[in-house]
Length: 64
Picture 1 (cartoon, rainbow, N blue to C red):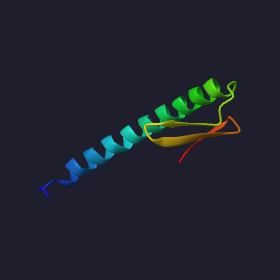
Picture 2 (cartoon, helix red, strand yellow):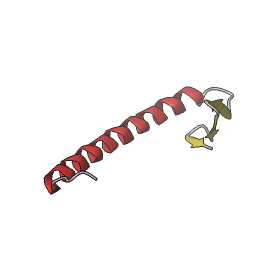
Picture 3 (spheres, rainbow, N blue to C red):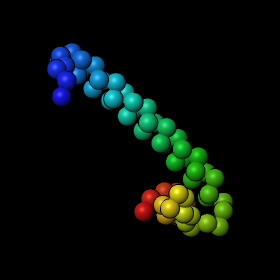
Picture 4 (tube, helix red, strand yellow):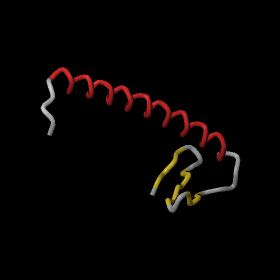
């Protein structure tokens, strides 16, 4: 492992933490858009890239 200073490690940590926060926000937005899209469709599940995705009660996305 490289010899890193505490400040460098903390900067990386804060950057990762912010990235996770942004990704979680984007994930939530995408889930809401997908639910809005499928709630009026007669679809219970779909396979995308080999992954089974179920729509439970058309309000929640379940990835198997």
